[in-house]
Image (tube, rainbow, N blue to C red; front, side, top):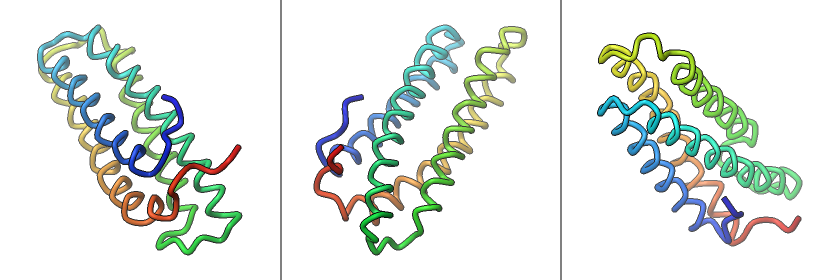
Amino acid sequence: MTAPANAVALAREHRRLERLMQRHQRALVDARFDWAAQRWRRYRERLAAHIEVEESWLAEAETQGWPLRWPVRVYRLEHRRILELAAAVAHELEAAPRARTADFRIALIEREKTLKGVLEHHHAREEQDLYRHFAKPPAR
């Protein structure tokens, strides 16, 4: 992902990430495990790049003392948790060719549901608070 030009582009990327997760889950439901794993790798790549941009914005917010509703550490803790949950799903996908049953798919989608819940709250927090402070990303 190239760095988005502004907060609107970052919010759009939230929607793109949601669609990528949906494609991955459709592949899981269809028992297309290679495709699901490929979609998940792509999802994690885009997610990491997205978080990297947000982290640069958080550094700017911190140094400039922007009046955020939530402390910078809250966003950073959520980023870490999001990456950990996404990694756990990847681990299950990679390590589980053994039991790719319907029960496996259901359990994996349930794990992803936890990630989705964290993401929903996190994205709302960013879009309501962090993004409103930036018309464009900080200069590098």
